[in-house]
Length: 377
Image 1 (cartoon, rainbow, N blue to C red):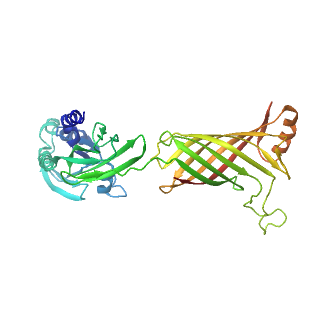
Image 2 (image 1 turned 180 degrees about the vertical axis):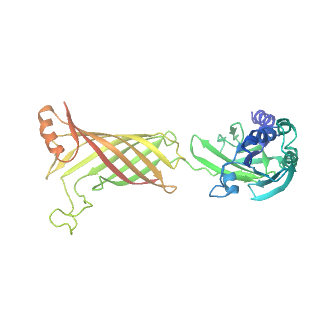
């Protein structure tokens, strides 16, 4: 099976070896389409370069966008003829491969189509011949799929390595995925034939611990088990109201910090959630659902007679600030379950704490902001 796949890659090698070229033009606006048409006859992929130089510079911009060459062409008019200047920049080395100019009288439409750009085409054609086809060796876990390195998806066979035809020199950005391993995004400069790409892969996180606070006041703790390529989680959490700290001054003396707040309540809960993005995205949106009983401790432990159970539905975002450390922020809506005769009293109490509305079996309280730090294992 591996040899069949290698044969397929060989047949499609020409696509992987076609250089990517960006064109930057300053001159007669109506000439630009003719220039693109002339260069488009060569064996290359042609793209429009930005009108202004990027902040990172042309070479870095090209590397980030997998551009092999940037062609700069400037047209200016003298008294009787036009002067056309060109420069070819190799992005991987930030080196000018060729530069020059030629003079020409104002061309006709036929000349623009057929011969006007011949001096530039000869230079471009000569430089493309210098960029030769080669093979790079990709090493990764068996079963890894590599996207973006060639026009087709590359599948790593059982021995963990596979040669891939590319054009060198060149910069290639690709994404590697595996069902049991974290996805990776890699940018690799291929300088010569036989270059080796070693894709370092780690298992998906299976456990995360989060410490945070509800509305910046009451701390909570949650532990989650992650599965399905880190798209789903289930877990346990504990929201406590025994101790909290308001981040504002006291009501009686604004110069003094408010004392710690305390309510005799604990809410252990089960939690489940789903990430909408893959695990290699630095910013991931998720949806979550929590369910748990509300316990009073005063001094014995008993269920809250006004709202014995609580369900929470929320959406949030997880921002990975380090390989194992993330910041999580979410907004949630709480439903406090109660019987009909207690709903009115519960509504009156919660109304003083924020926006609520009553239902036949409890009240809805929203929105509540929670956030914390999550450590992955």
